[in-house]
Image 1 (cartoon, helix red, strand yellow):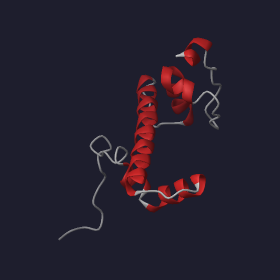
Image 2 (cartoon, helix red, strand yellow):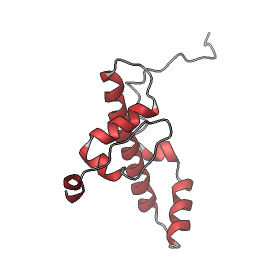
Image 3 (tube, one colour):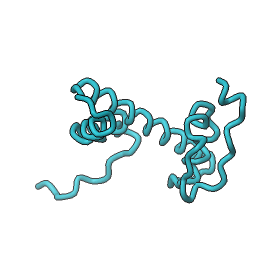
Length: 116
């Protein structure tokens, strides 16, 4: 007889964040793209935008996971996200103007990072 609960899934085995369609759905990115550009949006454009957002989120969470493991913690906090993004060269340039609530002090991107 099957129980109602399926048990806890292993978070390492799940790969939901790479698939942007599963993460965001299909209609929400289409509405956002259409509202922001005012143009018609094709299916391939929605899929590409969803996959790019999914990859971006997976990269941020991977950086935060490494910071969390470095401190031997099991829970990712905004501080870990902020530290992970500021230590990575590409992410620090992208997120130099972001403010994460509860993330602590963020070191600004240096001039040589901004130049490339």
